[in-house]
Length: 245
Image (cartoon, rainbow, N blue to C red; front, side, top):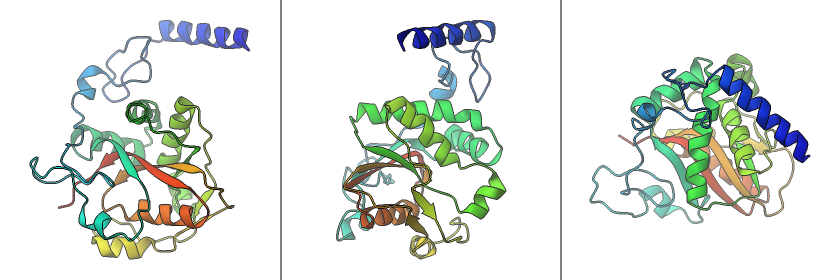
């Protein structure tokens, strides 16, 4: 096993030497030791979430003086559906453009740097889970898009964290209209009953992965389904958090 790992490392090093890695966004050359990163210039353009946000769902507050307190949605929940949200940054600027390219323009090579940034943040927060599960697409949407961007991120993230990934455990059985343009209440109603579990869980801790969170309706419905199916606890990992307007 050690010889195989050494051989793979040497082949990868030779490949990086012959074809130097480049930033997946701007094609700026990268150091061979950092093939899964964005370049420094692109990284500095990603806006991290402010401290002034909900400690459970990471909803950013308009003012930096609001401090950390639960938002209205989290405050009114009788039982928390998930314990926290980790996000690379705001759904704005370069990160928003990167997600659009990744999600709608077939730039699937962005899964590596985006997952790498998300993994670093999860490790900084010392978040440990038993398995990684992506938010699923309905089969018709998957057929139309040909890939699930959340599943691609989940696979890379699970590999980097040395965790099992369950791509087909959580399924979307209801094809609802797009969430864009709907109110928070309508978004929640739109995804009600949209998910099911392929088999029961046994008190495992879950890392649920998605690309963007706006109102959190999809994440909450997925979490509700996972908890009903026997999950012990749920953490959310997303690429970007949108601010409510």
